[in-house]
Amino acid sequence: MKKYIADVDERNLKIIVDTGTIRREKESLSQYFQFFGEIIDYCHLTNYKKGQFAHVDWTNGELRLASTLKEIEQNHYQGDFCLEYTHRDYLDNPREIYETTYNQILKMEEIK
Image (cartoon, rainbow, N blue to C red; front, side, top):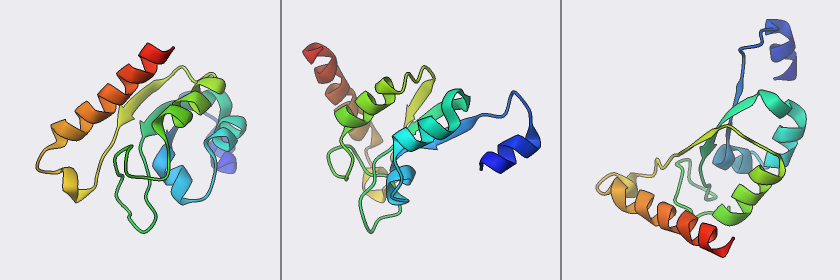
């Protein structure tokens, strides 16, 4: 990837990180921030569960939302996020899973 970025050599080329995919590949988010730094421009805030390709909710995977957000904050990320859930269990009522995550984030804010 670093060679590709160097070959393209354009200031507007940015990196999107996907937290669940990083976990699935047994890599770390901090490694991405160390490697790519300020050219990380967007974050798919996703979770991963072994044996499933789809992104799962934050109560059902290997990652923890609070520690993932803390790691992102420690790396001084200032870009945008999106929540992404692709598991078929969420297709009938996606609002429920987004509200659950939203409420988790609100609770974290109250603790601060």
